[in-house]
Length: 511
Image 1 (cartoon, helix red, strand yellow):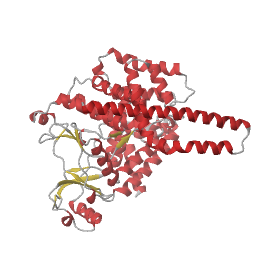
Image 2 (tube, rainbow, N blue to C red; image 1 turned 180 degrees about the horizontal axis):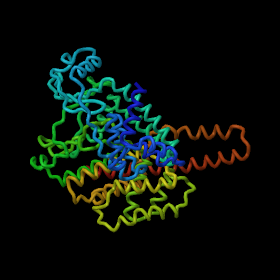
Image 3 (spheres, rainbow, N blue to C red; image 1 turned 120 degrees about the horizontal axis):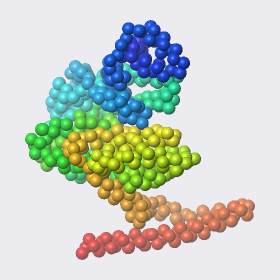
Image 4 (tube, one colour; image 1 turned 30 degrees about the vertical axis):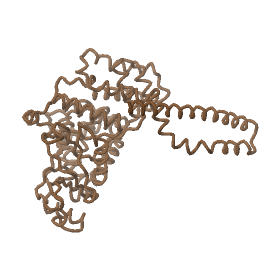
């Protein structure tokens, strides 16, 4: 099977002239000359990006998904090729209802009719990894059942192996191959694809996002019915709404599109900066809007196979960069990259600052509402790559999601000023991360650990001082003891401060 797929990949590559895109960059030029000599009858009218997109569509759904992922790596690809790959659509015919029922039988050990009060044989949606059917639980609850495509795992394994071989060849034949790191890109794609094969993982992502937005007035996330979930089947609450792309239908239901666009920005920045956990596949097919009932006007999130996560360092880096960028403090942007450890410490700050200024300064000739957050972040990545910045997969996912959100927001409201909407949120978040608020919050978080450790410190220090040591070590331990006493005094002061603030808050609440 792998040999057959390899033959097909070679034939499709030759048909669309992908060999020319690679061999034309081969240093000696001999391979390109030989290809032109043996395949002299080929002529191509379309640009290379369009031919690459058509070739990936011909090779099937896994290669289409790879192209979609590759389109997000605009720090590596020429803009024209990235734009073409962004047009790839995951159009896959549904698998038969017989196969769907067989998958359910295998998952539950009994027929679907013994599990569900009703199961619709016709799928409502189909993609390369899974498809969705509507059903009803025995208690009458309406649900959506996501079923993994039968036999997809070995197909993915074969195609990933071939992609890895192709990436290795690309590195050998193309001078730019090492800089583009094709094998790392394939490994990154492999990780995300294998995660999508585990529907229990997707269910957990959905459950976490629902918990994060439990009391939100902006976003609705379906409830997961865990008793019916397996690695191959996911059962969740059925959500009813209108796809975000159907603007006329939303207007007919009286939905305020301008408010909807601002809500989308707030949802995104809440996920990123409050939770560090964001839906990373927010294309129009995965976002609906509720048009009836108590949730009317709220976003509905679907498909949680790809989720991004950020730690505190990532969030601080992003907020610092955005705020410094719009204040034209390019030195702060350069330092943020170096302090995060993503650019080597030996980097000259003034050179890096100058490179960032050269890319970003022209943007300010335009109104703020015309500045693209996603493209701004992309330009920062591209500039940082010249200074040996390592690829950060979580930030690549973020950049892709930000471009999606920005496109959706401006589709709903062409005059959307993304910066004006996001700046107050970023400033509040930064204020919450520094100063006395952050001190109090971190102190409260660390209090249980201090309570367990502080009583032991005198005994541990006494044991350390009593043990035989040279004079230098004794002096160091004595200094440690003095520092411990100072720290304990400071912690006691913090505890009194916390108690005072709590009392003040209680007094305000009572009065």
